[in-house]
Amino acid sequence: MKDSIQKIKRLHFDIGVLLTNSFSSALLFYLGKIPERWGYSTDGRRVLLTRGVATKKGEDSSHQLNYYLDLISGLGLKTSPPKISLPVTKEEKEKAKEMLLSLNVDLKEPLIILNPGASYGPSKRWHAENYAKLAILLQDRKKAEILITGSKGEAELFESIASFMKKKPLNLAGKTSLRQLVGLISNADLFITNDSGPMHIANALKIPVIAIFGPTNPSLTGPFQQPAAVIKKDVPCWPCSYRECPFDHRCMISIDPEEVFEACRKFL
Image 1 (cartoon, rainbow, N blue to C red):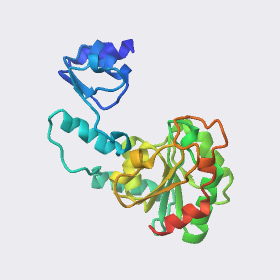
Image 2 (cartoon, rainbow, N blue to C red):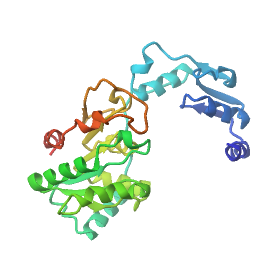
Image 3 (tube, helix red, strand yellow):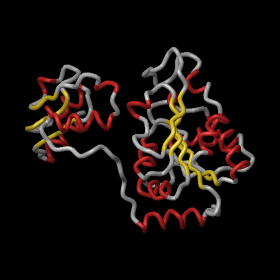
């Protein structure tokens, strides 16, 4: 934290708006001597804020996008009707297409991107074998080209998926910049993912999304707009905040690849 405090001080910010709810983030802005510190008065941090906003009744069941908009309006600032979008240039899209062609991807067939990771932890990840079974169904029944994206640190997960597959997927995990990833997703026909950051990128690009949810609540963090479908099972221990499931991971195990494939068909 010490390095972050010094960096904040050097940048001489006038105002800091806290979208996070943690005490530590407010303390960071306080110790960094940002004159104006605005945010929700949660987690006992009211004393650290110069302008605090109380949460509305029922806020804990509202999508995070609305939660942030309510903060902005609570601060007396003007907001717009909720929607998400992400610009992608023609050049970025064309460069991504050139990359795919150089890797012998047949762009006449459906391009489906799998995003099987989740930085929060394995509890949010649908199992590798299930992703592989789904990919095989898409290859066999839809002649789909399968591309896997994710971080470099998730290489073992992607290798595990590929080990179940006769026709290996194209693995670009850890091999693209963020903007290159945006370009690739913009060329996809379908994006299949766990609850993750790239899910929201695809949703902002208006690429059809199949979002597989386990321990988290799609009402709060799911795709905000169409086209999208959420696959989730009701289990007694849901929701939870575990990074690793201490039980049998039933929320994810009970999601069948055939069920997800049927959801995919609606977008293909």
